[in-house]
Length: 603
Image (tube, rainbow, N blue to C red; front, side, top):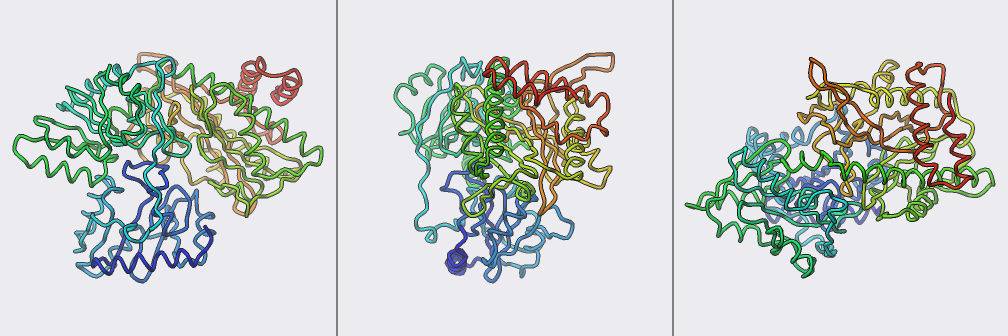
């Protein structure tokens, strides 16, 4: 949305609503009632009031001013989309950028700061309240900024549920629930509340289309020693699916029935994840816990046991991932061949047409469902915009020169993919090749790492950055995120990034490996594969783990500055390309095999 007068008009209406309720400042995050990264249209309140469409950001509105915080992935996009709205961009992570709390501290004592408790987690809310109370500010958690302002607000999504068969999941819902009960018993609990949509989908082998690109269903769930209940729009669940769920003592209730259900329970001791439970639900449970013989709750920091169980893939899931990578690799090979031929033939190819063609090739693959995120296809300076999405207004035609960055992914019934390749479309500069090779060296360093049991992602992150740092270069995003199995493309609880995360990397976890370098106004480079953690040896010093690279697509050899690769790095690259050819060639035509053979030749 670029109509700045529309954004200004919406902010004006919101300020009138704030004044009517005695609110001096309103804080609007990007999340929904389930703390999701990608939200249904119903909860895109921050986008509605700011016009900024990136997936991460916090909007702060006072009666006179407005500010939006976002991270480095979106700096350029936010500058473009906020232009003319009167909203001031605050660049997170830069040393001179104040935090949201810093701005709030400047308010007059006893000012009311309003938030919507449905879209703030318990952890976020308690942290905010603690900081603001020190400055004599009042936090009001019952304010919905969209109320009486967002007149055409989309309804809650209503896509039907479908079950994820055990032949793909590798475990029944009943088996998963049994494991979950065993884990919560360690905390002396007999129940657990699930609010995160991917955790619910995984637990009950249930999928849907309520969120773009992520096959999840808007719902809550409660698992107790007696039964499991999914709280969901009941029209989404067919009679046949209900009967199947009932076999594992799972029943369905209305989406708004969680608190009424809890109000008639007794002797429940519920484990609640402070980071994934919204404050409104938590407040209602707090009220119930005060009633005699009702319920107790254990508020836990850190990942839920479901998050850990989900992150460690079973044998069926690992096998599925590998098959999905082969199919995805075939689609990418066909895309790269098509792109090379089209440019050589003088055809007009744009960023958007590259994405459309890749979707076409992916659709040819068995078990393909859809994209796992909106593709990033950035030519030249657009590649430096880390989360760039081509539109009719920005769509560039490709030329036979420079760099094209493509970060794309697919949802297959037996796996989720996420892969980035940067390719030369023709003549490139020495700087481009040197930058590319530094990124490649970091990528290889992480891919070949051995590390002891208990190692965290923050301890591995430096491997991917080392060669960039040596030349005074870096990138502002994380190096790796977990990835779901026909689920969310970004999945916790593990990651590989500079920021500390207490979760260690364990065998069975699938994580991305994606260092990069971005030169604003010039080009961007990123090389991304998915890697599977595995045990590689055990010595008198304990267990040691390493990674198996899962993604299968050639790395552009024309961009490699071979002189600065070590013998071991060349060996890894040659072995990787040999694996790519051996795994993909049985699925390719003779012409495609010949093309791939050339792209995977030894250096």
